[in-house]
Image (tube, rainbow, N blue to C red; front, top):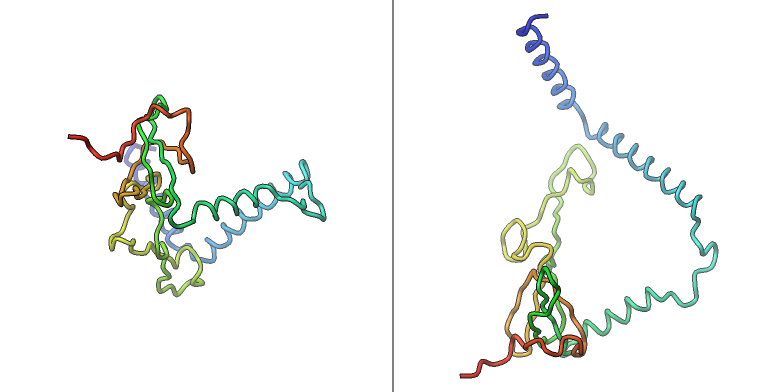
Length: 190
């Protein structure tokens, strides 16, 4: 086969493949997704058979993880609480300094409204991925917020907004190990 014939044959194969893929309907996509779900279910069954869930009929009477989550939620969402945020150097983990904050640390990825909206979709159900689109963000724009998904923000006790992507530790009381770290929101002295 000559070089031109091979190129022509490859081009025809590409067109045929593109036509077949373009002809895919949401039904074939659903079948593929169902096959993946079945595979995941089979894997889960195999893992469960190898190491069964330890609580067959009775859950533990004292689920510590849930208690920890509930306690953290109550303590961390109490208005007027003072917390300490230590900012750490990225490579060494040494404290750069700390902030005394009012309330809690929040994620810059948090939104007050839904991040997805339903769009007009005629070939599938309204809850399918093909029928959703990204919603406009809280700031009125599309795309990631400042700080992305890794950023955090908080307000100091003086009301200053601080946002960072540096490593940090939050504590409900000062950390003795970081006693020499300077307070970053302390008033400047003349």
